[in-house]
Amino acid sequence: MAFDPPTILTLTIAIAAAAAISLLIEWRSARDSALLYWAAGFATITVGCSLSLLRAYGYFVVGVWFANGLLIFAHWMFLLGVIRFVGGRPSRLWTLLPALWSLLLLLPEGPESSKLYLIANSLLVGFVSLRASALLRLEPDMATVGTRQLHYVLLAHGVFYIAKAAMPLIPGTLIDLSIFRGVIIRVSLVEGVMAILLIALSMTGTVRYRRESVIKRLAESDPLTSLYNRRGFEACARRSLANVTPAHPGALLLIDIDHFKLANDLHGHAAGDFLLITLSDLAQQILPEGALKARLGGDEFAFLLSDTSAQQIRCVGEELRVRFNEVATKTFNTPYPVTLSLGATLFSQPPKDLNALLEQSDQALYEAKRNGRDRLEVLANG
Image (tube, rainbow, N blue to C red; front, side, top):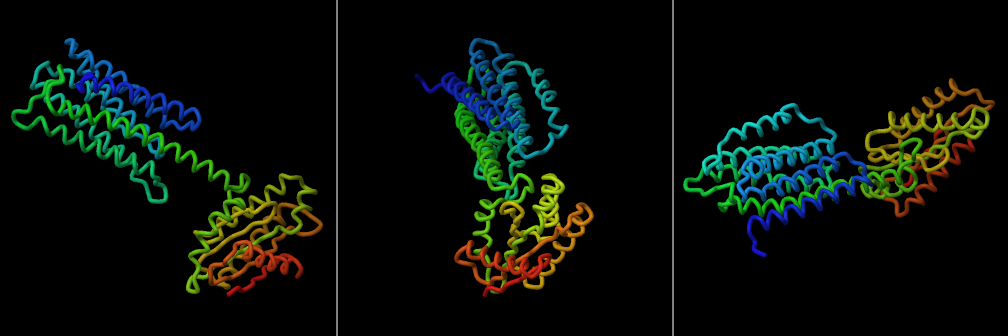
């Protein structure tokens, strides 16, 4: 089989169709709307390339104008998918693409028209690809391997089409869209095959990585309070503890809700849920940014603070205790007050074992309970 334009188009049709089907299958499990837009884009390329084969039989309007117009539409769908993926909204300016495409219909058939058509078509595809690439320049904490790969693939694809738009301006350039004549057209067909394959792989990998990240986050989160659970806390604590130095000490704060079971028994489980959510909300408000917050189980919470001091941990702990007590007292009437017992451990060196650090904070918490509850005890661990 010769490596000619019809063969390359046939290969493109097969790859684009496979990409559309693969993205639809991925959508069935991920339910990410970006996948639907991207699948529609590849399906459009499949139809467009199939129509391109008709140009050799003299069908200029269908095989050239309509087929290449579908290429623009496919990249527009890619752009919409990227916009959905990053949580943005499409600009009204991009709705003018169909109108710009329609103007190309006014060009008569012929070599010079082929050049003008190729320039306009390439600029539209190039700018849409570059815009999609720019949207994927995410912040380092949001970017993934998949999004970076898709960003660079679309960037290279867009630059190629912008450069392609300039090539017909070179004197003596042979371009005939009706019969695939010209080096530019052949190179473009080859680039199209490679781009489709890389874009499809990048899109699938991008959404799959995000889906796996969501699953991991759910597995490490407490569904009631949205804080970390014990598993998530232990995984993240290792990274935080590694940064502890004498100049930047850390603190682990453990909290129990006093008479939590009593409130549950008297006012129902909804009361217990309210108390747990109240404490988690207060922690989000009071604890410094970057503090690791977790519900270890039941009514036990753990907060890991970095670059702190005994005075800071006492201020944070007391504010948590006072504000929680105010809410609990106003909300529930119990024979014994629903309060907080807090135990904290200060340390200036990374502990060898997280469990040992938890045990030390648990000892401080036990001291708080033994000394009458509704108080904070702090232990120093050099």
